Image (cartoon, rainbow, N blue to C red; front, side, top):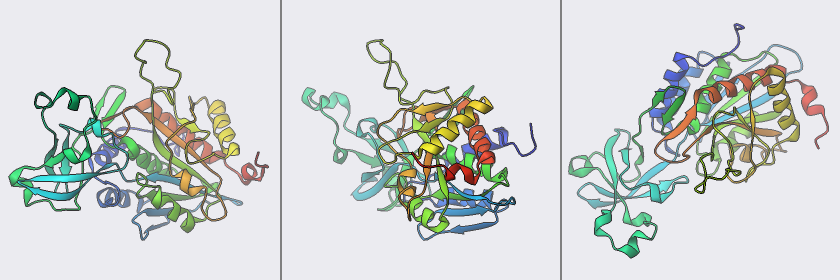
Amino acid sequence: MAENTPSIGASQIKLLEKLCNAIAVSGDEAEVRKIVLEEVKPLADTVRVDALGSVLVTKVGKSEHRLRVMLDSHMDEIGFMLVNDDGEGLFRFETVGGIDIRSLPGKQVLVGRNKVPGVIGARPIHLTTSEERGRKIPLDALRIDVGPGGAGKVKLGDRAAYATKFRRVGPSIFAKAIDNRIGIVTMIELLRHAPENVDLCLSFSVQEEIGLRGAGVAAHYFNPDMAIAIDATPAHDLPVHDGSENTFYNTKLGSGPAIYTFDSGTLNDPRLVHFLAETAESAGIPYQFRQPGGGGTDAGAIHRSLAGIPSISVSVPHRYTHTAILLSRMDDWKNTLALLHTALTRITPALLAQERP
């Protein structure tokens, strides 16, 4: 393996575990930002934290005629915010980001900077009516319960996140915040092994889960020639209930990095789509196209910034998006890193000099 070829080993897995176990619900990304700053400062040419809290990093290449390539991964995760104190350690809360309310009762959470343990409580099923059981539980019927002993340790406005701890089981990774801590570690490795033919502009952005807010600001700061959003994407690849073929799988675990063509927020630049696919094929790297549909990444904000920025998204597939525990495969992560690094080493100004279809 070449000296400047990145890989996923024990240290990268340990960093992913540290990041996934950290709490950084949108708008309060401080814990993850601290870890990111510790990692990037020894590697970067410049590092700054912008007004929204994103970490903006540059690594200048050495060859002539370099493109400025923006890479983006978001630091924030979905979660909850305490909004009303009902007494006795019971708090009404609002969701932060897209969360299915049906999945919440009984989930363990950690609240505030001190990570006070709590549980999301609902009325027991055997105390509900048959009519109530047939309806979706409304959010205002749920409470985060930290108990009387935890009541004085949290306050209104505190964020809460799932208490799930990182686990690796054979080829699989289980964690609460693979979306998008897996992108964060990938981007750090790309910085550690930065190609000399491009200027890397790295945005570890905030508030993606509530409207792609940090990435758009970062794009204005960097003014790049092109951008790649590195994220985690749903793999809706479970068998359907009647045993027939699942033809609406979105992406599949084990099939490699997902290259986006379009989603609800972005028509990805066709030149970049073709370039990444051709790079994967020529390098023998497994890949898949993410099926068109809903959802989106920070590319949705980046490509509309300034006078328009050619953009594309590449994601590691995972199951059980925006729940208490996500599942990804190690090989998909490794191949995503390999594809992105190989592509970066091959990028030249001729790529964007082509006429856009």
